[in-house]
Length: 122
Image 1 (cartoon, rainbow, N blue to C red):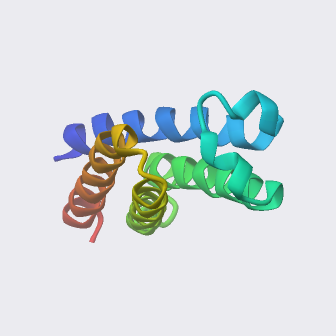
Image 2: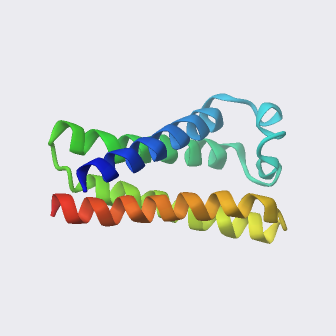
């Protein structure tokens, strides 16, 4: 269980640090080719989503790694699930159907991390 959790958590963290850092650091013009939805959302919200993604990535890695309240990793994984539900709804409303499979995969990975974390740290 531990090995499976760490593999999934590492994949999630890498994806969310990458995407979150882009949202935090790049301009809307730089984000637009990869994330067309930035035009319909205030920049502050795009930055907030990026911050939450980076914090979620840290949350699935740091608590179990340090042994300090490892159960927080479960909350972080649930938070990443919520992000993906919102992303799914956004892409669906914009008819960006090609983006939905990635949202589903990330949702399943986050749910798996939450379930594995619950079996390991509770």
